[in-house]
Image (cartoon, rainbow, N blue to C red; front, side, top):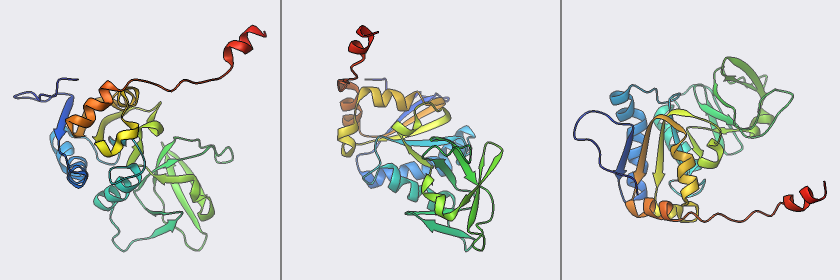
Length: 223
């Protein structure tokens, strides 16, 4: 188990905040991302802080937390928005490309921000991917999803200034040491775990990985 004791004074790069109730963890994550981390560390909520969940379903899964954080960070104020494929998109929303699209030159895992007015006449929406503007027809929005929260699997290969990870026994099936390691190493400057010591202990202790049968050995022999 890691040392979970916060320093008596000053700042550090790792914190564990204990809470046993899923709804309490959800509320804590909202306060951390919206107020506490920006105030104490100066990170921008929409660009510097990434919440990573072990799974997509449940109260603490990526899908529900995305909707909760969208409401906290980018609520509807009567401005333009579009609802497609189970998501609502507004200007300023953080989004992720979920499949390769060679025509648009955007790929699975690319992160962007909705930047242009949602044009209901032309049926288009514009996303900024690190300075490059990409236009989407409304019919193509199944290639996108909100990205205030990502699954840890989706975050592989990416890094963020700060990551916040909920850990609860409702994530039981995904509590594995390698998954926890992947999530924690996405944070470049600050990592905050929110949840229960029991769930953290389960993740630390469970390090069995499923065997993968690729027939690679046989293929090498055939060369």
